[in-house]
Length: 131
Image (tube, rainbow, N blue to C red; front, side):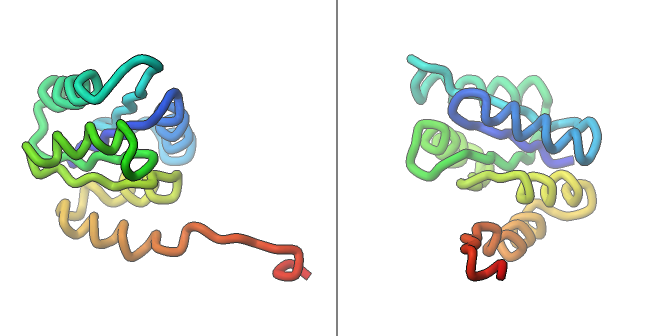
């Protein structure tokens, strides 16, 4: 099973993990890591590596809240060392697709599915669209 690590500012990662488990049930090898005030890149990199070591996994996908911020930069350091891909802009539909398909897809198949399925998750709905 492919490990999913959600890395975000504050409690967003835990909230996403809780929401996924509310919908799809308790998830093994899905971990939330939060960046706390005063922490930096080395702290988060260490936590990501610790999780991977403790869970003894070879394959992981790193989900981060936003491109270019500390969670992304930390995940990118790990990606450069281990080839674990980084998915920026994590959201609930994306994580659900991941957890529901990670047991029967390869990592590459899963990444293609995430990319093609969730290109249009962001929508702006105006009053005129509803009436």
